[in-house]
Image (cartoon, rainbow, N blue to C red; front, side, top):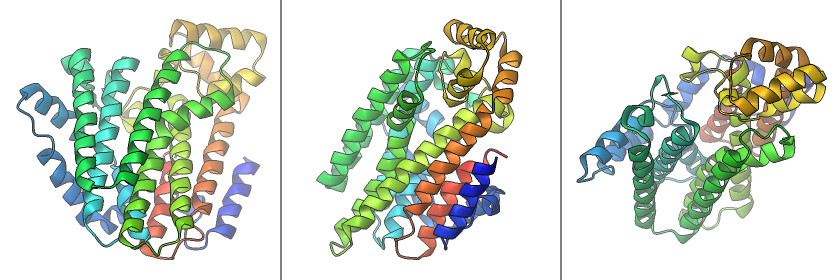
Length: 355
């Protein structure tokens, strides 16, 4: 783990207002402080969401309410709030923008769970398990369209351009991932492109649009700051997904709120297995590839042993640390304020989930 230690020192040297990963490893206390910083705005987001979910169709209201109120850390809405206020935004439109981001995220979850045939999310039965696939897909479509209705209310073509492009690319990422189910030859480069499109892009869009909102309120702001905030969101999102993929082979079902080994049973080749395959014996490679093609957890204990022995978990952890470092480096030239520091805490929180 020497590379991890080197990365931690890099953080301490480059990012003075943000604690190192090691210091942030407790996670929950620091995250609680971030919530407190934007508690009023988050409460406004939570108040706005049900008011914008109105529909004459009972099932739409029922499923939307179920999925939106099923918990979650509201990370993406927090990115909107923190990014805008880190750049000096003082208005109230960031609340509506944060709700838009949450609607987009929730729509992707509904569609994801149908495609992946997932039965558990955030510790609860998924909507598709409870109501079926067709209603889940259609309500996901409703949430997408409602998000775009709310975008119109913001009256910002720049923000709409970012979010419409992001929504399109996220859909492409979903298709890319689906097309690679059972593909045992997926490269690390292609894997990273999938997680960029499927996951990291919404983190990027949340940060970017928050910054754009601040710029529209103060055109004297440096465009470089907008770009730095955008890149922060991208690297944070990549780190977050890398941690998720690590947890799928080393996490705990109760703690995660979803089943361990889901990626294997869905035929998804993620970084822990990509790296394990590089160093595994021919027999071990056959074991992993057969399990992926069969979407089977039958030999999960043996596969976990191969992953642990290969150093693939450390490799994935190091990759997450590297992306977190890149995210934090984007904050260095931003104005010092509590919201900037909170963005750093949010980024390092992702690593604290590794325990």
